[in-house]
Image (tube, helix red, strand yellow):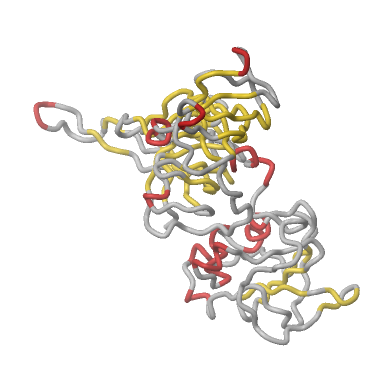
Length: 365
């Protein structure tokens, strides 16, 4: 964090966030930090997570502090460099001041509820989390679920029998297009298995590029083959590779919040094929939209407690040593930024120890 300073709050400024009216009204975990600054000047490079973490014990608590409802969470306030965030300790609120001149800020004229700023959206707004860490994961098909894989259109032939296709080449595709004209090309990879059940819940997918429909299949054209043109090629693509429709542009700025209902998940995979992950690395978990997760949901990460022999206790039945399960150990927090039906992508925001496949991801208490 940058540009923090500690000064007395002298005025009531234009309200940005509505907090609980008294400290006792908010959960203890959503309390302000005792060392929270009185003000923070927003600068380029800040994230909303960092700003919230400077004022709160738990950054994901900010919807509670700001008194946001679920609709507001989907469309968070936009904060821009140059604005000043003040901690009004007397009211237990964070406020946003608009600078008039050095050292002076416009006082509040009325209380505002969080709302979307409609001008210049996304250009200079402070992001929720570091955008560079998740950019490739927002639109590219890096996880394909089983039902999507089974019905995906596929390339059955290439222009002039070429082994690999490049930009501008033709590709011939069979399968239902569902009225779509723009598609991403992927190649299925290793299966992703639920750590608890062993069931395959999806497949890793290698993103290869994009295709644009040139001519749809028709009976008069002699079959059920569509003609596509390669719009972009990130890797070599060819016969047998599969297609999925280009998804809508995802929401790229979202407010962290606890899931709508309790969620307990396990880490399925760590991006890059490594065994352990740390801060700002990408992982996938075995819970998704159907389990109550949405974009911006925050989970706490734990090492699952192991079962050990209690050598201090007497022997149990049939002379066997008694077993005891150790408690789970909290090791970090996970920010969900993309969800599928049964799988989600998360960015590790904090980690006090290496995170491994099989670790627990649980709703904050």
